[in-house]
Image (cartoon, rainbow, N blue to C red; front, side, top):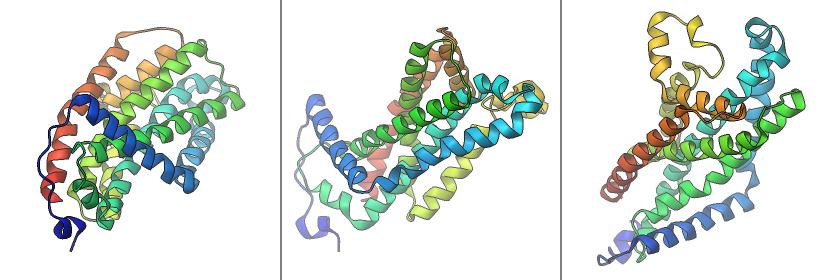
Length: 266
């Protein structure tokens, strides 16, 4: 028997947009407290940038650019996107764990916006994206990466965090639909692997087979990586707008869908 079965569903309430935002921020504080009391949750976003940057630069650097240092301007933006997108998978896993524990059943008995528990959890994960992007840049600098525009790097990191937040709604929906955290993790990785690796993040698209090039050219990860590379070089191209538009569409479609599915399944 869940907390909702014992207490009963609360009567419908009218919540304004400002109240919804306030409720989501309050729930985000809860997520930040969880990270504070369990900093091990940041292990992946600290370790992955180091592993990816060192491994990929050593494997592909000589083959693609001739030297590791010459490959870094291509690699660092790609790893920046890959690590942040990979970190968004954890959102769905943690959401499923909380739902299995009955935490979200208790939230449903509170007079708060329905979207607040979900949005708060996703907002708290912005800290993870910030750590992931910062670590990637620091590791790149330590290896000799020198971006043309430091201000562009900051904007690129913010852009990646916004897009990662939007993509986290996809994995949040998986967390709501599936019954086990391990299933969410496995299915999310199956979705994530083609998106991150069949793109221009690590190698030129022209080196891929024809059918794979077609996918890589329309892959949203490729557009984001291109936008990040342009920003680090001090250019503001159309790929930035395309990435932001895509993020807005994902949130507009999946946020209400995730809330609706969550309310039905809960």
